Length: 332
Image 1 (cartoon, one colour):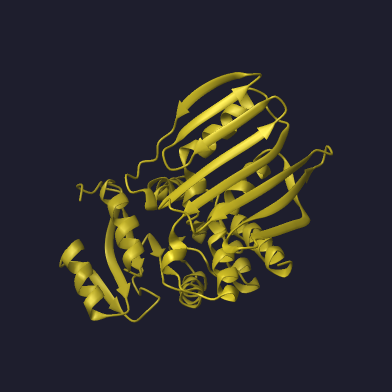
Image 2 (tube, helix red, strand yellow):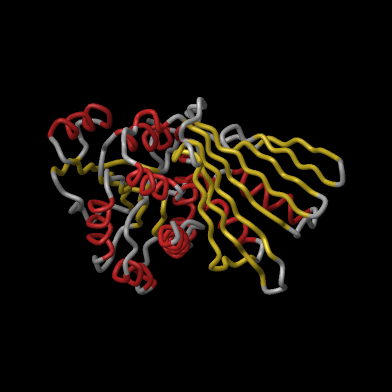
């Protein structure tokens, strides 16, 4: 790990499974402003592994979703299911002076959690950052900037397309497929919602979810948006979990006299306006395609702490995503 800066954030990891090890550690090791000083995990084996990776001076806590260390500046919560994440998040939000929180979705944003996150006095107000990492990719902000600079504001639709081969390892029934796909939608409908919201659109109640008649792993979710000036737009998440592609995510925006196509994994972007095409490249910092956006998500979190400002995927934004998912679930 790089030598730590004088003002490095002291961080605890709540959970040390495959995702924190694969995603967080490589990204944090490239930084000198984060120092992992403690880990909570469910087994002695995992805690032993954590010490072998992070050093014998690491403080470890077994079978707990809460690290009792008041010296922590921030915690990263990455637990294997919604129930455990809810418990961990509640433990921290109920503190008088909680640390800043980086949390993996999904979790249940009930009334208690939401209002707890909104009602701190300024002296103890934490940054609560939900790790919707693809929304933090540089290509997303680049799209917004280019559209604004070129005054391409009449957006007809935004489509995010996921192709992967994950279904081959699931082995679940049709009812479980619906819940699985809805849960995974968290990381894709948020991109659609963020881009349209940034351009003045508000989601209407109209939602449609369509699955392939012959393959429940293939389908799309269609969200309708409108604006105060009467403009309408459509947000679409297309998914194919039975693809030969290991993992690919593409985005397309279309509007009056323009079309935008981007590859979120490679960062390649093509803008066509009035028949003219321009190529751009906005690569992610993560060489591992499955952790694309993690470095940028952590960067947003750290910047939020330094600037005392909530990030773009805060609890309020996550509440929007959950409302969309609730609407989808009620209509499918």
